[in-house]
Image: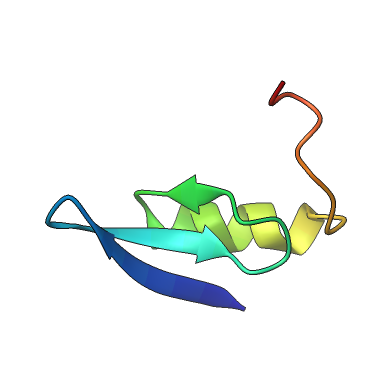
Length: 44
């Protein structure tokens, strides 16, 4: 499920599994379908 949040006056879409934010709802949904629920490996 993708959550909607407001930050800095803009709407962002958050993956409820890992918390990653997207500016496009479709990108967030695509990510969420592949998300394993952990921290994204590319964020350090």
